[in-house]
Length: 420
Image (cartoon, rainbow, N blue to C red; front, side, top):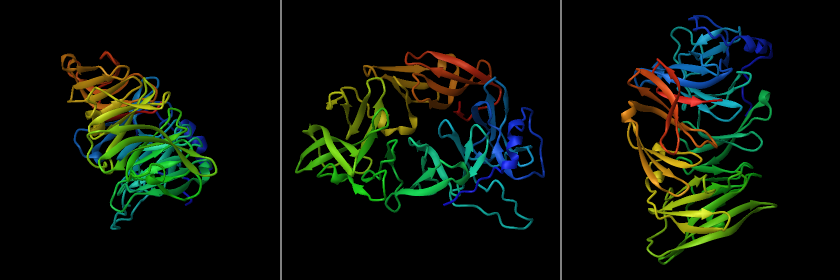
C-alpha cells in the first residue's frame, strides 16, 4: 500500500523557520497540514482539566527549557492550533506517531457529514524534518517495535487483532504490510527480534522471510500456548512454554534460529511437581532483569529465572506475581522493578538481589500524574504535582528512592513523553 507523503518538496524551506516559539495565532484559514513543530523539543505533554481527550491542550518543553504550545505546520509555513489529537507515542530516535479522530486535512462543506475512520487516523512525524506521513490506517503505537532496518511494527487501533509492518526505507514511498493476525475476536500479543521474526497470539511464529507460519508445538512438543522473549541484543528469539501430559509437566525454554529454515534448540527445562494442567493463552508472562541479564518467567504464580550464560532455570524465592499481573502499574528500569501502589506510593524491587522497599512521596507533597522509563536508564521518570509550590513537576527516582526535580511548570500535566 502506497502511503500519502504529506510534505511537498516546496515546503521544506518553511520547516526550518516555521517552528515559531511564540504562542500560536488562531488561524481560521490555513494551508494543508504538512508538519508538527517539534524541532528541539525534549518533552511533549498534555494539559487538561477533565478526562475528555478532545479538551486537552498539547504543549512542549524545548531543550533550552522554554514551554510553548505544540502546533501543526501548514504548507504556507504558518503554525496552526491543534484541535484534534488523541495520542502521541515516541516510536524511536527518528519518528513519533500521533493519532487523531479526524483526517487532519479533512474540510467538510457546511452541512456535510463528518467522515470518521474506524480506529482513527495515524501519522508518523519525522523528528528532524518535522514532516507528517499519513499511514492510511489507525494504529496503536504503545508497543511499537523497530527492527534493524528501521521498519516499524504496530498493531491496529480498532480491534487490536492485526500487526502491521511499516517499511520506512523510502520516506517518499512508505509501505504498510499486514504482518500477522490474531484469531478472530482476540487482541494480538507479539514479540519480535530485530530481524523481524515474530511470535504472536501466544502460539504462532512468523519467520522474517516469506509468509509461512508455524505453531509453537513445532518447536516445543506437547504444548499449545506459551510466550517469547528476545536476547539482550535483540538478535535471538526464544520461546517458553509448559510441555507434557498426564500430570508430568515441565517449563521449557527454546531458542529459534533462522538459516535456510526456522529451527529450534531446547536450552533449559524445569520440572513441575505440583502443577495442574497447561496454562491458557497469556498464562506465562516474561520480563527482563537488566541487572542480571536474565529473563524472569512467571507461570501459575511461580517465577523462574532463565540464565543465558549457564542455560539454566531456577525458581525465585521472592513473590513477584504482582509485577506480571498488573502490567499497567509496573515499570522496569535497568536495575529495578517499580510497582505503582497509589497516587504517591511505589514498591521498588532491586533486580540485583530481589530485595523490596517502599517509596512514599506523601511526605514530599508530590502526587504522580504520569510515569515512564527510558531505555538503558537506571532511573524512573515521572511527572507530578507538588502541593508546596502548586506547580507541575518533572523528575526522576533512583533505586534508593531518591527524588530529583528537573523541571517545573504552572501548567497541569496529565500525560508526558520524553522524545529526546
